[in-house]
Length: 486
Figure 1: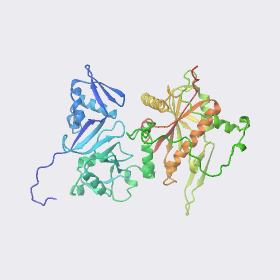
Figure 2: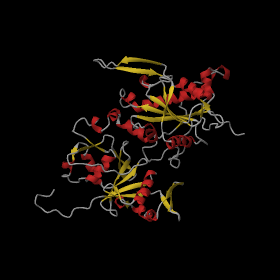
Figure 3: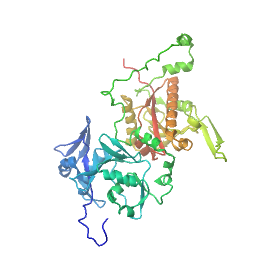
Figure 4: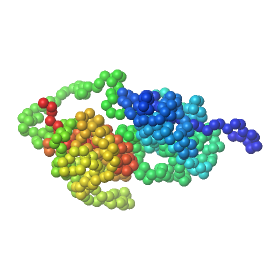
């Protein structure tokens, strides 16, 4: 701190945010002005841009200051702005934050979902800010990163003073007082963290769980929220799916566990030797299999889809019961379905992306399990296409599923009652429902396949519901199985 009356030295230059290409991306400009991005064996046609954009390709390798085309929320170079924003929409950029474009970075901002763009909301001296309870730091390789399941980007911490200052922000601090502290992060960095919801404004120093800005977050435990965001697609940039990350590290584990030593009790003599003697249910279980390719010449019929949903997911009965909390509790409503659910909560909802169904228009629908009806939801055609294409890719199929069922969860229905195990219970419900789907499809002579990954950001965009309120937790493709090639 400087004593009153003492003349201060030259003020440090303001920090700079620079956009730069991710390390695995290269750009190639053609003679006609068309620019193509290549990465990981893939290529993306970014479109045709003027000579001005092509001139900045080399600068994007080291870092192009956002101030070169944006100033005080005004666009000063339309062509360059359009080019850089298109790169951002494809997730091909990261952002360097530092006092100068060529000096050491204080941090590197890595987008975790498409459309992220650094924002700097206003912060006044009277504002009180505090670290989100969902924000955390961890070691990643030889670097420290700050991230959150709520955030659109993670921050690679290059200056250790940032980590120390974040500890101070675990309790609410007024910006006016923060300015007087040694190691003050600067308003610019605080604004970036606020924009990513690593920080939030609060009116007081109490009730922080409630004050985080969204009442629906009160019901989320930290580990559940993190698992939801990081074990699905759409809210992170980590490798996803069957990429065999440890194939060169350890040998593949065996299909069967090695037998325990000791006396073996043979059960074969007590099993049905004649396949005809087994029950119908046991036969269904043995016939159940995943169908990834569907016959485009024989789409599933609306009557079949109706029967499938009626048998697997329709509400069977409803009732209410009072919660016993010692001094009396509220009445809770219940609605059972054909599959089991933790605490009879039944938090799962079904959304149908229809590609080919005889008698039903292509589109996106919600299944009303109580009324056994479909309600059409208006969505952008490109979002519906992305949802179906994503399932096709995840299944390794040769075409889109005829009908794709997205299983969503109303998280509060479970977390209102259960602590620490809420998200695990939801996934157990999903497993039970998927097996019910398989058995129903097999019984009807239809094909079905559980899909391993879901894009929670895309689903939130299509339903216009935040991913932490009602989010996708599973998918199932249903249709008429394609006959094997002769």
